[in-house]
Image (tube, rainbow, N blue to C red; front, top):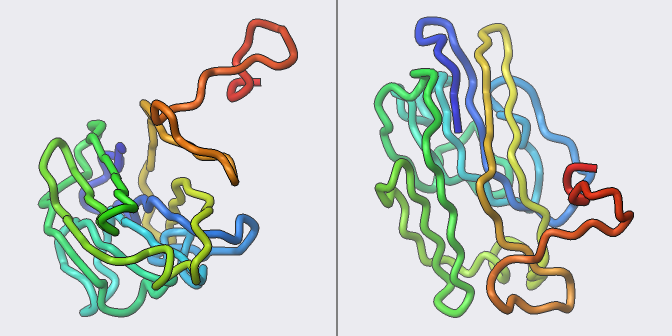
Length: 178
């Protein structure tokens, strides 16, 4: 993740969000594009102080059900992250232990045990996931570079953790680039 380099006037950040709805709306500015999406789990990387419900410094936070303007379930002070550099972010979910971890530049910042499937997604184990970002009056570049991901098709299983790159139309371009 690259949160831009506008330190004095930059906003608002990037969020990794899981939600089962696919077509629901988020919001602008401090809502980072996911405020109001219910049900959802978000890991936000927030670069703008929006009020007493969050840390003043750039921070990571875990937010359930799109309640971005309330106290975050978990927070971690990241210091200044609007440095124009890419930072490694890893989200890992282990269903058997109901644990998810979040790492930032190789440091584990969250290790949380919560039954996301039951407590958040009402027993639905299939969710959409991705990144969202938003700005209000203050702006900054918000960039995401995905190195690898793990996907399961509904009713499928993970064998080695990753799906093979496919080219179903035979044009020598992988489907995800078509």
